[in-house]
Length: 324
Image 1 (cartoon, helix red, strand yellow):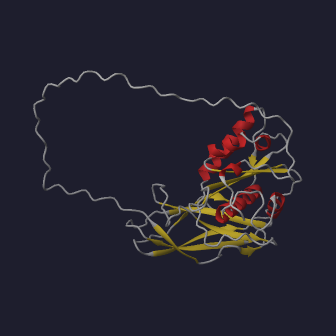
Image 2 (cartoon, rainbow, N blue to C red; image 1 turned 180 degrees about the horizontal axis):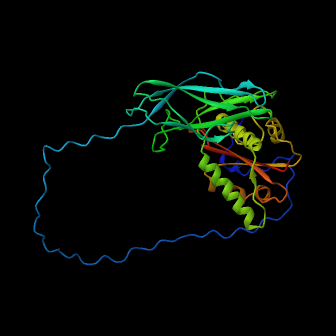
Image 3 (cartoon, helix red, strand yellow; image 1 turned 90 degrees about the vertical axis):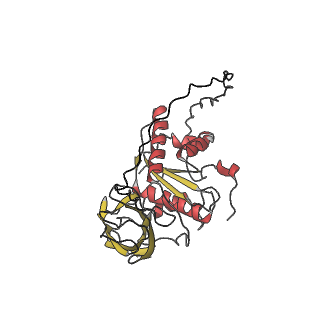
């Protein structure tokens, strides 16, 4: 697979995708801010000396403040349900991870929280057993496989009692990834260390719906199957370092959407890199992409975002839109 250089960001939609012929609104001109030189420096005025004031001294009997502890964790192993475990539709299962407390804070009142991907009936927060520094702990979450065939990923974070995310090595998340039913060969992402960002995903959905509202289009609703297909392709692009609609396993947009369990004869896909605003700017200057963003026929959306530090572009976006 050849890596794409930056000019190839302006990728056209796949030939198998029908694109609305509606005309995109004319972009507003880009505004530039010019700076001015600072005013001429005034003559230096010598200030009147201020008499010294008494300096307070610390009471030697007062206790010295203890520095706050540091939160950190390390992933040890998947105890149950390793990545790409095959399950049946609607099958209930328990995912268990083993983590080590590598920080200096004892874990008391810590929780695991679902943040993005396929929820699979996950609770908003699952308590973590009290864990001393350097100790290990097994964390279990009860889940249910989706009611459709496909590849699904559910992303979680470890949080302290204040709601601050505890870093896990170089990551901020850990996950469970399953395969439901019969699927094509899975994309190879072995030894790929990546992160996701649910806040970025929501920001992009909001930006897309705002752009649609600006031209009188209805907002798109999030569909879990489209989300799974989009997330899978972003993971493929980020881990295998390419930027194309064709997957590393030869699949195309329709293949991935169908594999995720989404039934539709009309769907669209756009891809981009960078931050949410970067993605919107890339699509605005590509007429076919912008026509897809404001297309009047689609009603549902799924957004995937994956960041790989060692990849060519860092963050990779896939947006799948369709109408059931």
